[in-house]
Image 1 (cartoon, rainbow, N blue to C red):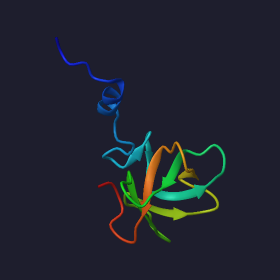
Image 2: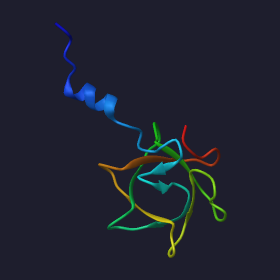
Image 3: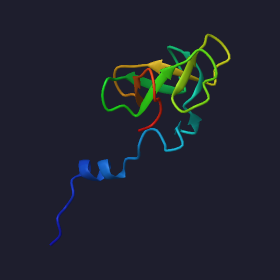
Image 4: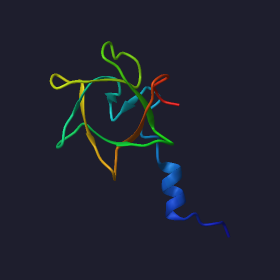
Length: 101
């Protein structure tokens, strides 16, 4: 008789990383001009200090690399809503070396 795996173990094994190796979430590149919204975001984000899915560096221009975000009030590349539970991704703010680790 084989060993039966619990549903939690199966879910953990089947779960894929929130941020893809290509620095995207659900097809959205996670760099660029970002607008903070309170409803209908493209990505729900939780800010953490350990075990992030993405390290984010706030920049003021040319947010071309993975994890570089320029916060704007209009014409964003994508929108985020900051949440404390049930996030799509978890981010940690950094001053250097942004991206997926």
